[in-house]
Amino acid sequence: MSLLRPSSHPIKVAHLGSFDATMPVLRFGSDRPKVLIINNMHGDEVSGFYVLEKLVSLLPEKFSGTLTIIPSANPLGLIHRQRFVPLDEEDLNRGFPPPPKARGVSAAYKHTLIQLGHAHDFIIDLHTFVLPCLEAGLFLPQSSEKNTALVKRFLQALDPETVFSMDIKREEQREASALGVYMIAQGKPFVAIEYPPVRQINEEFIALLADNLFHALSSLSSGNASSCTPSKEIHLFERQQVISQSTGLFVPTRKLRDEIKINDVIGCMIDSVSLAREEIHSPYQGTLTEIADRQLWRFGEKLATVGKRIA
Image (cartoon, rainbow, N blue to C red; front, side, top):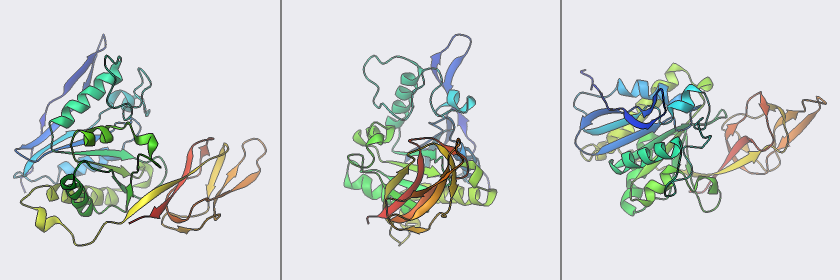
């Protein structure tokens, strides 16, 4: 099979003295629909690179539409292996839209992402969870019934291990200023995907994730919509996050997909001073979709997510 070759269109974001801050952009195909994939907004989230490398090897020469990929939306954070933009320590996926006359390189990157978002018909944002987890699609309330149907069709074709409904007015208020919320308000259909951390995935699973993403992209083409829409429904879950109330070395005692009841023990925390163990109990009931592994976790960090099915 002849593969589609990308064209490279790097964007200069800011001049930083001895070098320029840029955003890499790869473009495949032409015509509509125009789909934008954003990866690595948080510099330490790298699973998406492995999925995208496999994805581009699947794109046929006669690809329908235009696919634009931003391999790294936060290249400065990537090279520093840190979540935030290192020059001003800002979260690139918060604070949208930037206030008028906002300063700093993060504001310049945010404006670039907004411009690219406006130039496309559908936006996909790739992230990586910190904890070992199930692959998750994040469903945000869309601006119209048409966009809602389009995003649900995409998620059906993607077939992730779980789908979280993001209620930004209640459980997910921390996400209220994310890029996706802003672009949806501008009328753009938007979906986010959270992949497991790179230490959890192997080549076989990466290939599966890439194949599923390609299948979901194909569902966005009007000519492929009927053939790529599976009959099964997507089940929506609400994220219920277990937050650490101390600092210590966590020992998980439950596994992903386990059904959890209120007050079940999900792990233990070893105190780094006394070496005493303290049981960690779940305040929630549902399916375990994230669980911390054996390492130091600090006060206020997430230890687990228990998914509550809502639809």
